[in-house]
Image 1 (cartoon, one colour):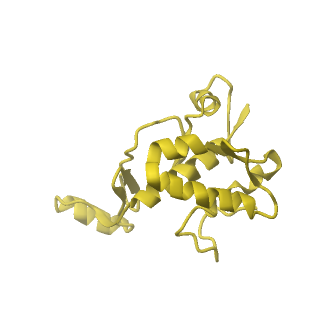
Image 2 (spheres, rainbow, N blue to C red):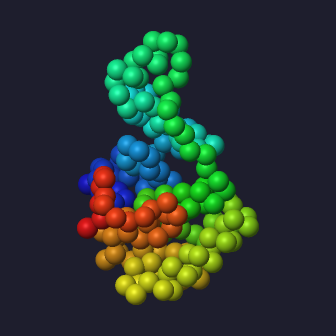
Length: 173
């Protein structure tokens, strides 16, 4: 088996391992995937869907979800629209979580001015990290091999919504 990202393993001939080696691995609410589709439709109570424009979450209560669907409506109860900055940060976080690296050139080519702004922030994060967990070699940002178990903590530095505090789900070591 080969290690995939933070916490997955796959046989070398598995599609997940092949995607990881090719640098096209993705991560969604269910974990790592080789699926490149930008849309994920959430079905069922409390499910979360992802669209190009943002995220939508269904009613958490099974009874409430059932009523909304039975009434012929959508069961979505909240949504979050993504800004350009959110999209850039999301791409950086996904690349770090999947590849433990991201290319400065790819960042700017994909996102233009918004990418340039995050490039400066990325350099600052790497430069001011006392543990030197994230390094910049002039072309790419790389998570040092010995720092990979702390990838959630490293990626959180790019998340403007992360406040620290008490974890509700998975936590870093």
